[in-house]
Image (cartoon, rainbow, N blue to C red; front, top):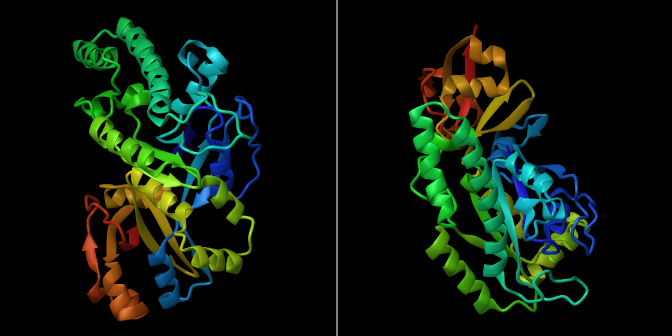
Amino acid sequence: MEIGITGLPNVGKSTLFNALTSSHVPAENFPFTTIDPNVGIVTVPDERLKKLGEIIKPEKLTPATIKFVDIAGLVKGASHGEGLGNKFLSHIREVDALLHIVRLFKDEKVAMVLNEINPINEIQIVETELILSDLEQAEKTKEKQKTKDSSEILSGAIEVLNQNKILINSGINGDDIAEYNFLTAKPVLYVFNINESTDSKLADDTKKWLRDNKKSGGVSINIKLEQELTELQEDEKIKFRKELGLENQLENLIKESYRLLNLITFYTVVGKETRAWSIPGGTHAKKAAGKIHSDMEKGFICAEVYPFNDLIKYGSKLLHDSGLARTESKDYPVADGDVVKFKFK
């Protein structure tokens, strides 16, 4: 699953992507540096996996990952093709969720699209372009639909969009509109890009506005500082954070992004490898087996489940004592933290 990094130009999207992936994507001071999206695979921080590694001592410890996509800055009029807008909007349509970067920092070296720090206006400009794009798609699709149910679903979506509202949290059933892949039906996490000049009251007021109007949250990150820290050695990073009392904001953001995608983690211990796997919450055991290999899903017999806390308590001997494991059927919803051994034909 993929998370798209979006927002207006010059708000810190590519800098955040660089920090997350420790790569070096151009972060230039003009709008359309990132015409084609950059994709990076990012490791999910996982304390449980580390503990499993300490207990089992495998030769290989493999964490779960998620993909981040750096999408070029949207501008007003993008839904009508301004600034190569149609191409950028198509990139957003391909991802599963969005990190919407909002500028709350002042820096004379970085041009400001709005000529002022106005986070709510930024959010509304991007949101409006997504709404207009969805509205056009919904109206065109409705004209082609032949069934009454599809027409009613699209009519409901059009009614919401015509009120300049986004579809997520609008009361429309997400499953009903999933096939249309609407932009405003994707979950969003707002990321406030801050620095030492940021007005903390403005940040707090914007977060309150998001809670009241969007039923959504926001996190504040000094993106430039985090990107600079990625260039240090690990021991230097730890020392720097300790001296300044800084949390690892990037790790926190990755974890929030993981939750945004509604992903949970289960673990397997096979041979010399202990591995974390990501699946959507509520996934049944048979489908989870298919995450590892399609043959395991096709020939599924059962799943032996070892609760993580029991494994911590009893150690690796639990894996060799079938009496301490639960045997679950194909319809068992895998729980976050389960250590699973699949049996299949």
